[in-house]
Image (cartoon, rainbow, N blue to C red; front, side):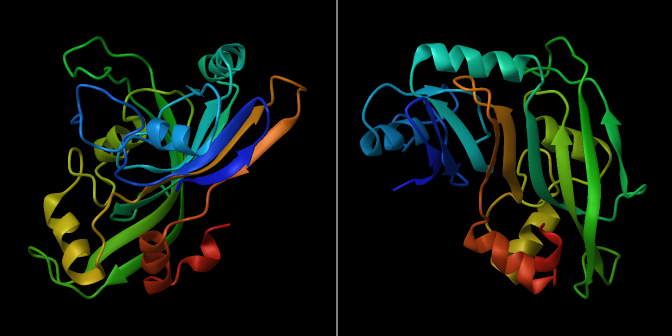
Length: 233
């Protein structure tokens, strides 16, 4: 059963589990479970995805209950009037601790044209763990809050890799040695990127909406291990 964070007659939001693809595509096999199919088993009536989350990303996923609502929500995402909040655990301590990554990105095909893309990030907590890796006797990690200003394909993942602070657990853009360290020492087998909150205007009545998604057990275990729980906000 999916965790439904909010619902009314026009829309609903779920806390998407990490590792679960949102919908069918050529990137995933036909036998896998999909968020939209699982949701149709819980909720009656038509359902339309208002936006997307990467398969390994968890957190707030917004779904419209009819096509008009889907179009209205889609327009907000295209106009960049929504505010998307993410949490990420990255390798290293970013310097400066807060800034905007302004780096053009291609679409799903790396050979495609690049389009402007910006991500604001803020380091809210750091840790140094006494585990040797390579030539370093200790490893540094940081908890970031990220707000993408645009909505490019894998934007946060690519932007943080671009500044040499890849997300822990990211198999495409991250560091395999640090991913293995988290598996072996912390029991973490997922990418640590979570869509923690989404702000938008309800198209039906112009209400300002803010929907938050709680962290899963893996995330909570990491934040407790590193003493970060108080920094989650």
